[in-house]
Image 1 (spheres, rainbow, N blue to C red):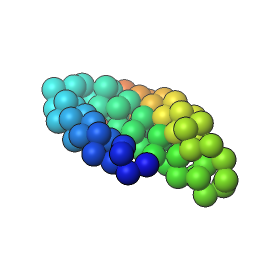
Image 2 (cartoon, helix red, strand yellow; image 1 turned 60 degrees about the horizontal axis):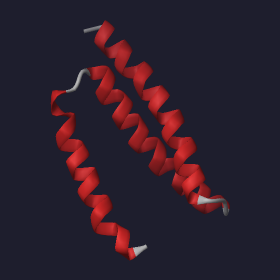
Image 3 (cartoon, rainbow, N blue to C red; image 1 turned 45 degrees about the horizontal axis):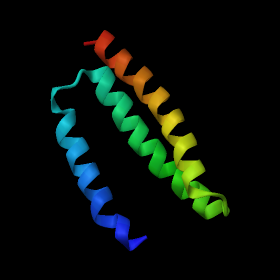
Image 4 (spheres, rainbow, N blue to C red; image 1 turned 180 degrees about the vertical axis):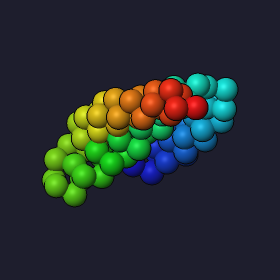
Length: 77
């Protein structure tokens, strides 16, 4: 697990910098995916399930919710 710490941090930092020129819808999708994956992995780990499966399910659900939220933000702009 410790081997993955620095590559994951690099991906998170790179992803946050890459979001600067995106539309609100795309930013919402990316943010929702990242938050959903983290939450899904955490919940799965606490519940005793597979962390990767929890991360995948959370990423999908978070991406959908973030996309909807971003689309509404663009519409109300």
